[in-house]
Amino acid sequence: MGDVLAGIHATWEFDTDSVLIRYERGIRTPRLLQSLRERRVPHAALSSVTLTPGRRGTVVLRAVPRPGADPLLEAAAGQLKDGCDPYRLVLPAARETLAEYYADELRACLGAGSGEPADRFLVAAPEAPMQFKAYDGRAGFDGERISFRWFWTGASSEKWKAGDQTFPVTDLCGVEWRSPEGLEGYLRLLPRGSDAVVHTSGGLTGPTTGGTATGVQPVIPRPARADQDPAAVIFGLGYGPVHESLPFAAAVLESVRRKQSAPPAAAPLTAAARRDPADIAERIHHLGELHRAGLVTDEEFSAKKAQLLAEL
Figure 1: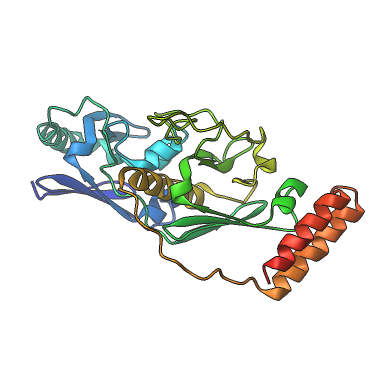
Figure 2: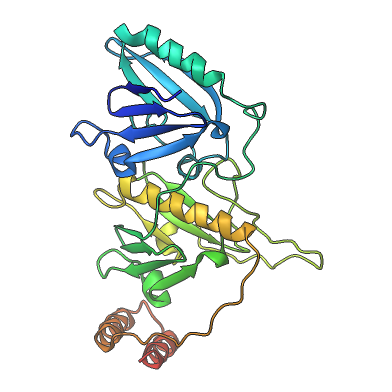
């Protein structure tokens, strides 16, 4: 096709096997779309194309992705507002005839399997490395592992007791994202064998218990609340905004799925990294404060202090 259709906040460029969507960088463009910059959507990732009336003299051309084709929408699990939908192109109503033409052209490119869920991600996830600031800690992802570094102000005593966390994607079965625009938003990692409920149509993936030919992995109990779970960071006003935390969740989800489908590889031997002594001292000091406040028992204080000193 090779044509370009420019709308409000985005431009669609039609190719023979895909649509390249470029998002505007203007002040009125939702920040999620600005952060995505551009996305190439293969025709094989689409299930249908719609054209509907919009608000204030506009029409909306929308490409509807197949379930399971886009890690961003899988992580969002239906929580995105219409204005942040990366598959919507808003056009002036005067261009409705042109929009209908492109809608028909795009429908003609859809394959026979367009009505079925995709068996793998067909749209690329946002690229690592990335990080964002949550209310109780900073989350980072380098493409291989996720790290949570807790803040003094915000992190619960349960998280301080557990210490900073690092999760290789090979140890995870999924990720759960709850929008910061709602109540009690958070990003929660799901370790393999965890007892979290899994929704295959949403941001979670993989079984809650791993089955093999010889048996079933034991279920690992998890805290009911995300603020007590060392595998989760919580959002709040100004923390974990959609344009930062959702691409992060999508990148983690894509990496988890890809690692699950890849054959296991031998891990190279590497020397354990030593922690910064100043950081260790800071954490022992805070641990002592928790101990004096009665939030940590004598046994827990001694065990955690010995663990921190062993990292020097």
